[in-house]
Amino acid sequence: MSVLVIAILLAILAGVVFTLLGLISGSDETAILVPTTLIVVLLGAPPEAVFAFFMSAILAKHLTHAIPTALMGVPGDTLAAPMLEHANFMRRIGLPHIALRKMISGGIIGAFIALPVSLLFAMFLSQFGTFFQENAGIIFTGAAVLIGYFSKGRWVSILLILPLALVIQGLNLVSTSILGSSLSISFFLGIAIGPMLTDILIATSNSARPMIQRTKPNEYKLAPEQKSWSGYFPNPFKVLTKKQTAAVGGTSFLSSLTFALSPVGMTALMGEIVGSRVKGQYKKTTTSLSTMNGVTESTYVAETIIPLVAFGIPLSPVAIGPAQALFNAPPIFTADPVNNLHSMMDPIDFLIYGLIGLVIASVIAYPFSMNFARKATVFVLKRINQEAIIGMFIGIVCLLAFYEGGLVGIVVTFAMAMVGGMLNRFLGVGVGVQFMIFYGSAWIISTVLGL
Image (tube, rainbow, N blue to C red; front, side, top):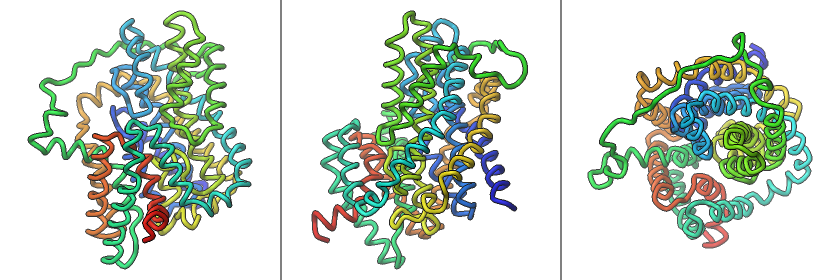
């Protein structure tokens, strides 16, 4: 079977799976994208097909995450959180379906702008790739300090860099002495599922359970569907006004040139900048929503492509989170030394297979979201158990950890998840900071402590 056929099949699979996962409110991008992408890599898929799979997954996920956000007032995932205020206004005036259409249309335009723009910028930055690869340790450490400073935890994130690096290297030393080789997949899987596992542990604790306990079920009121176009596939440029299309295009272009900033921060910032220039609450809200969802797509595409093409090491919040497996999935992909998509694909391959992923996700997720949003939401609310979905991903993580290191890999994964999740939940030490500490831990310990 040719690489092109495999890429198309995997992009279709990602489009279907992540279109459905996006309907489930609160699903974390890192916790679901890392293990699923890892499975595709470890099954031996060609690098081009892995990239098409990932591009399809992120577009499909971020199109349908608008459905619970707009219709129910519940964030579809982390990136949808900045849109809640505007989405709730549209729900209050009885127009959540309009908000949904604006968001999804902005998202699809933003993704297709980001791919060529970020690829061209990455090719420019690639002339500095050797420097970044040779100084990866100190760069990761500096990035941990920078990301930590701008995270919720701020100073505690910075203060805990050395202790957490010591914990990681200690676990690595123990596992290496048992297995004879170091672990990698188990560590970043642990970091990825940390917040999710922490909620599970809290639920099992008599003293901590009241923090997350609910006394009555949530109630949602869904507006009826109103179709204002003919055919199955609506035109996103007709859903948005000309000014809204221009706003989405401009902000998506600008955010495609960034790779070191938080996608959540960029989403909120661009939404506020555009909204402040629009008069009238309705126009301001719909323009902000279309712009913000466009930025969620453009930042994810750009923050995957730029470090992947230019450096080969994960130097963006998306690269060190959801796109982790594209950089480091031993023994197939490694970031140190660089032996991953960076060295296995040419820029033209990134363009071709990136387009394949985005086009297929658009064909699957966009018309589905526009035509069946309400029916799909009702089905998820009535039939899909969120705890079962979480359990499924915990099971996938266990499978991957066992593949790498047997029972030792599983223990290391859950030890890392327990430590990282608690730090994230109670002290605000973000997952991005933890990933950077993980990558820089060997350099930190050898330089600071001389070990």
